[in-house]
Structures are given as structure tokens and as C-alpha cells.
Image 1 (spheres, rainbow, N blue to C red):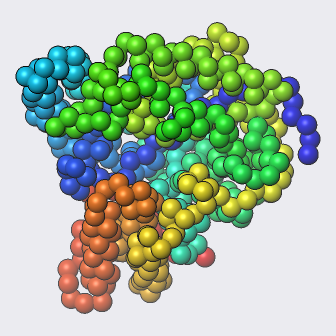
Image 2 (image 1 turned 30 degrees about the vertical axis):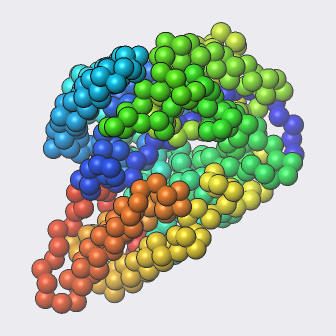
Image 3 (image 1 turned 90 degrees about the vertical axis):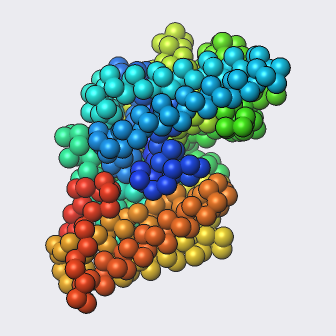
Length: 474
């Protein structure tokens, strides 16, 4: 293995994703997840990223939903801010005052301003976040599989091609250009996956090789088919990700889990009334610490890749976006070179070496999505894939019923449903979604062989640029 050059850079990768919840339920599980992310993460992020050399992944299924917000979905989002968030903040603040908790009440009233700003920002951007992301300067936009399906667990090569081809085509249609960056859903990798990615124009992706003995996480990995794998550095990631020992666990930060009657969060992790300004000052201090540690890691050169779920910043870690903005400032102050991933693999020459099967999930393996607890979901998705691929082979394409079946399949393949079940995050919502999409898929396929009318080929705004040819490609 060649030695790393002395030059080095820090690549921050933000993976932005939301399962297809628009139009499928509201509270406590459903499209309010999207509204919260738009208000508290995506809109503030847009104000921060312009001009920053950051790699930003936008999954096609997230963009499908952001595009829907140009119309009726945007109206529902605004009603959510005005008719839900505003009154519950007022009601809980009044209740806390009556209970003799004026500091908690004051914090609830302060936090209400997050949503009034989100309403104003949405209107100022013309209710069009996709165009706003496209206009960002210096930010490298990545795509992903169509609905965040776990590629190594697809039942067929055709099913995998449908996910990858639909995702890349949607990105090109929306943004007009693409440098070949592709986020592997859940960083799920198996050897040989590079060949499929190369066939669809992928040039670079991230992998998580944490736990692989003697692995150099600061050197990109060259593959024979062409795409470069950039290892995620978990020493950097865990500073933000670790809920017990990472920055967000500090006593001063806002507690995500302590809730008022209407699920508002006016406490700190220490159980005291949250003090916003003190938390912001701490976030800036933690940004300085993060950059100092990065500088130490990069003393011998290399590409330090810190990949994070975008929704962690501003939602799960309320102060996270302030931390990120301070990281940009601290990197310049401390002389750490910020780079996009594409810039990084030009700066640090990739080296050919083997990669192990892996994910960035618990245990770094596939058990979150393929274990007894989620066996029924996995079986449903794979069986639906086999039925759809077989129907396309028999009947050919295009056909409205096959388009509908393929979109329902894409919805079923999302990694989110198994993740929610494994983490016990959303009651029976993921199982009900799988049942709903599976039934619609079967109804669409049945229309191919009986006298039923062909179904509407669309599933709300999901995968509007769907092309069935990947299912027929040898």
C-alpha cells in the first residue's frame, strides 16, 4: 500500500433522507415527520450551507416529497405550523406558568419562534426547497437509491437496478448535473456492488469499515470497476452521534426526550430549564474541539470523512446546526482544509485494497434489516420484488399496472420500515405501510390478468421519473 501524501482534508457529508410519509398519516406517525424536518432542519440548513465545501446527499424520495410541497403538501405544512405548532406552544406555556414554572414557560415561548421563522423562510424561498438546494454554491450534491432500499438485500439484480437507476435518473432530471456521488443506503456494502454502481454512472460512495483490523480510514479505496469508496471515520462521527458520550449528551443541551403535555422540550439534559444561549455557546466550543481533533488526525495527511444524518442536526440535536456553522468558522481559524468528497479524492490518491461487507448500523452488519424481528417485512419486500420482476418479464413494459406495481415495490423496499421495527420507533406504522403497499402492488398485478381496469400508475408523488427498463435489462 502506498503511503498517504502529506496533504489532508476534512470532508463533511450530510445524508438527508425522509421515508415516503407525505400523505400517509399525520400524528404521531406520518407526514408531520417531514414538516418538522423542513421547519427545523432543511430550511435553517439552506441558510448555512451556501458557499461551504460540503457534500450534501438528497435522497430521491426526500426530493419527491419536497417537490410535493410546491402544491397541496406545502399548504398542509403551513397549516401545521399555524394551526398545530403555534397553539400548542401557547397552551403549554400558559400551563407551565400556572404550574409555577415561568422559566420553562419562557423557553416554550422562545421555541415557538422556530416555527414562525420556518413559515416565513418557506414563503421567501417560493415554497421550492429543491430549487433552493440546487442553487447552493460550492456544495456537492449526491443522490442515492430511489427509496433508500438496502441494495445488498435486494432479491434480484433487476430489483437493485430499479433502485439505483431510478435514483440517479431522478437526480439528473432535477438538478441537471451530477458528479457521480452516491450515498449507499445505510452504507450497506458487499464486494462486487461497485460493478452495478459503475453501470449507472456512480463515481464515489461512502463505506463504513469500522472494526476491520488495521484498516486505514483516511485513505480512499480504488475499485477495479472504477467507483471510489471513501471510508467514514467513526472516531469523528461518534463525537456527534454517540447519545451517551457524544457532544449532544452534554447536560447543557436541550433534552430531546423530556416532553410537556404536547411533546415540547423545554428541559436540558440535566433536567433543568433549558438555557438557549448557554447551549449555543457550548455548541461553538464543541465545534472548536471537533476541528482541533480533526487537525490532529490529519497531521499526517489523508481524507477525514465525517458522515452524519442531516436530520440529527437541528432535530435530534437541537443545537447541531449552530455547531456545524461554527465548524466551518473554526476550520478556517485552525487551518483545517474543508473539502467536498470529490475534491478529497483528488487530494488524496485512492489505493486498491479489499473492503468487507458492512453497514453503519448497529453492529456494522445487516441485522437491523435482516433478522428474526423484521423477517416478515424482509420476506414481504423480497416476495413483492420477485412477483413484480416476473410480471414485467411476462407482460413487458410500459404498462400502467406495471408502473403502479413498481412504485409500490419501491415503497416497500425502503430500509426505514425495518429500522423502525428494530428500534421500536413507530408502533405498527411500518407494518401497516408494508401491508398497504403490498396490497396495492398485488391489485396492480392482478389487473394484468383479469378484467379490472388498469390502476392509476402513480403513488402520490413517488418516483415521478420512473423508468421500467431496469427491470427488463439483462
